[in-house]
Length: 463
Image 1 (cartoon, rainbow, N blue to C red):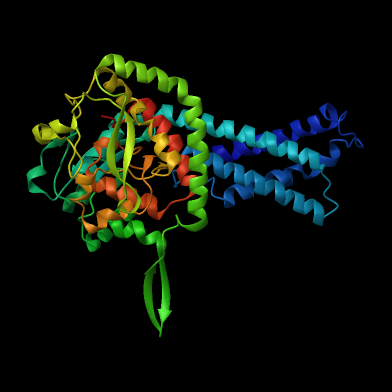
Image 2: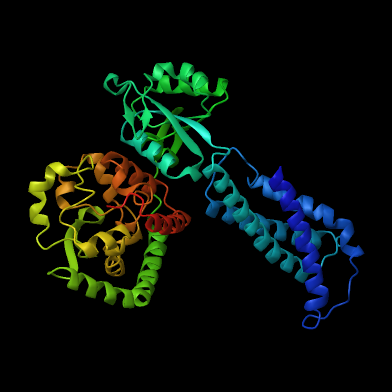
C-alpha cells in the first residue's frame, strides 16, 4: 500500500513538473497556445489511476513475489512506457481528453526517474532494516547437504537477503544433532510440522532433490495450511519444464521438449554483443593489463599469461588465457595435492592453495586473472556469459547429463559464478549451468553481468 501511495504522488508530481516545463521552460523552443492548468486538473486524477492500474496489471504491486531491483526497474520502465502510449491512444480516440503530447513525454521521463529513485530508496531501506533484524524470515532448510549448507552460509553472510537459517531437517541419521555452518540438524523431515510450530518458522526451503514427490506435495500442503511460505531448489526435470510442450497424437497427450532458445538469430545476437563488448573492454582495460603484467613478472619467475586446455562448445578443445596466479609448474603438483581439494565432484580447488603467488592471491580474489579471456571471447572460443569452461580431465569423468553444459560456448561469468562459485559442489554447478541454458535470454545475460560486478567486489566464493 505504501508503494501505491508513493507512486500516485510521484506520478501526480511528474505531471505538475511536466506542465511547468512545457508551458514555461520549453515555451521559447516549442511555442503553442498556453493552456491553463484547469484544462488538465480535471482529468489528471483519472490519468494517475490509469497509470497505477497498468503498474498493477504488470505485477509491480505483487508483494508475494520477490525480484531483483534490476528486474523491478525494468518492469517499471515497461509499465510507464505502456501507460504513456495508452494515454496517447486515449488522446487520439477521445478528443475531449486534451493533453499536450510534449507534456506527456516530459511526464514520462520525469516519472521514470522519480519512480526509479523511489524504488532504489525503498530497496535500500528494506535491506538496511533486514540487516538489523527487522522483517527477517525464520527459515527452515530441508536437507543438510552441500546445497543446504551453502544456503545457510549465504543467508548468514548476507543479512540483507532477509532470511535467518534456524535449523535443518535431514533424513540422514548421521547428521541429526550436528551443526553445519553453525545451524543444527534438529531431526528427520517427518518432524517438519512440529518444528515449524516450535521454532516459529516463516519460510521452508527445499534444499534437497531426494524427497519423493508424494512427500514433497504433503509438505507443501502442510506449509499452506500453516501459512508458511516455501521455496524449492529445482532438480533437472523441473529445470527443463520451461521447454515442455504438450501435444496430442490420436487422442493421446504426449510431452515433448523444445529445442534450447540459444540458436539461430538469438545465437547471432549473443555473438555480435560478445565481439563488440570484448573489443571495447580490451581497449579500455589495456593500461591495467600492462600494470598487472609488470606486477606478475616482478612477483615470481615465469610467463605473464598462462594458457590451459579447456573444453568448449560441443567438446572442442581450446586454449584459455589467464594472468598467471600460481608458481611455474603448478599443474604438475596436482597429484600431490589432490587429497586437499575442498570441492566435491570433478573440480580441483583449494582455498589456501600453496601454489598461489602473492600477486596471484590478489588478482584471483578480484577475478582479475580472468580478464585475458576477453581474447577468447573476441576470437569465438568463449562468451561473456556462459557455463564455466571445464578441464579435459574433468570432462572425462562426466556422466551423459553433465555433458549438456557443453552445448553452448563457455563464459567468463555465469550463473554458477554469481551463485557461490567455489562454495558450490559440482552437481549444483551443473544444475545451474543447465538452468541457464534452458532459460537463456539477453535480459538474463544482462542481469548476470550486473550481478558479477557485485560478486567480484565482495569476492564471494572466490578462491
